[in-house]
Length: 266
Image (cartoon, rainbow, N blue to C red; front, top):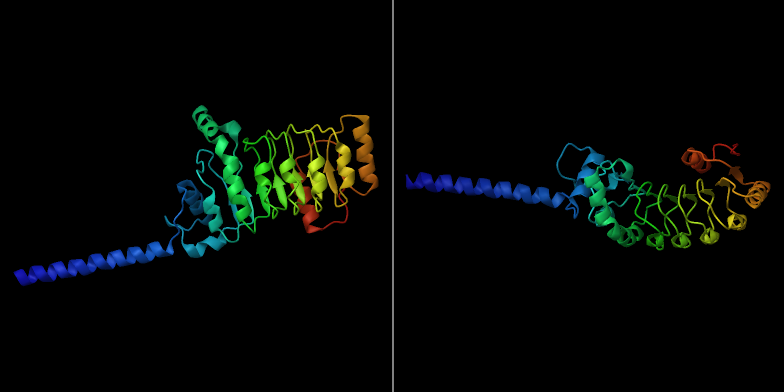
């Protein structure tokens, strides 16, 4: 009887060790996320049918976007795990939040710019950033080190100062639709800027756009005769100008990127 017990215990020990070995091996193949909501969103994007993300799956994430407004991130450090990440969309529709979600949202506002400033510069392949409806920012200083970004969308926000854009030397396409800033001077520092959407923006120095030789497309509703004169000068320089709000900026940018047509006709 004792011999049978010894054999049983031995077999059980081997079985348990085997399970632990398999678990250890599996864990070594899986990613450890710092933020649980980031892991859940990654699983959603991969749609792999498992409850864990394998390290071999990380290169598959080229575009990361948010699908649930109630799942806030406490850190963005996990984005560094994706070596091929080229597009990041952190859009939240704040207008659709419940009162409880809105209250929680307000608690987190202060730390978001710092998270972005610490993480975004460490994403070398990031080309497109969308913060539409994010509703966190009064300035764009958190972007000052993001020289890799080519497309930036921050619609319907509270931006009062765009100085943070002046060092984005790779920026080509910029959507600032519906923001309260008035000074365009930082745009003079962007040598590759091709398109800018200034719909529902009132600026005091529209003539800055005349100093950007790379410019091809402008959307702006003229507020004065001076504004209209500047837009006409831009057209004389070959820039396509839209004088009223349009939802088609993204499509116009795509057209510029693909170069499928030689002209863009309003």
